[in-house]
Length: 330
Ligand code: ADP
Image (spheres, rainbow, N blue to C red):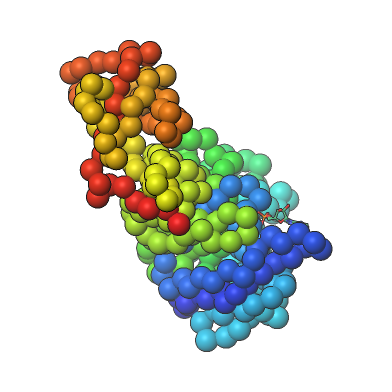
């Protein structure tokens, strides 16, 4: 069985010529954690994942897996497994042989290979498709096979590079739930690269927000959402407003703003503005205001409270917040 292992990145950097892709990052991922590396394109997520996998060498620092520094170990020796975005299945091999492939490389007998591959196909609910070729499967089914193929080596950590991005939105949400279930059942860490804050929030025990090769913030999704540390995090995870105040900036969640009478005197915890947009979103209504002090501001109102006193674009309104809902940004 898989042996769950702790992972530590100690001041790890990656340079490609003059490009610094990852700059001295420090991160500890306890065994059995669902970790999402989250950030915009080019921020260094995949480079970080590939260094953990051993598909890229570190330029500096140490990767510590369990008790060992694995910097110089080839991928197959690390005990990690990687699932790629493209799934990379062999088109001429059956589903069963695709899953059994890495066991063949390890010199297992055919009987052992097939037994373990079948058990893994059962785990991902694909045992009925063992004899098919990859081209005879849907995208979601191919993804399950790719997962089985990565997991059959019994890795201590599974690495996933944008695993859901090729799926349609409906399937993406379904597979997301299955990944989480699988991770819980296996008890190993999954490290999942994504640029979708929604995906990271839904899946992660530990979300690591990256920007320009550094970690801006890491923590539980709730902690990161409730108290973004920097302006970048507040803007990237969405649902927040950044407001300049004396001596710095604060962030306030869009759903923590209240509409107040614009004739009220202004206060340090209110902003006057003009409604520029109204978007009906079902259970909520998203208002956009333009303000002099903070530019565009978004306000999320429960749909009932919006329709109790509806507003129109062009209307002058003020928004206010409780001081405990304002978080200072670094
Ligand atoms: P992400 O996965 O967040 O999109 P990457 O880790 O792929 O980011 O890339 C980080 C930075 O390193 C980018 O500026 C990218 O252009 C650069 N980069 C990535 N791979 C290579 C490579 N093989 N050679 C040169 N530069 C690279």
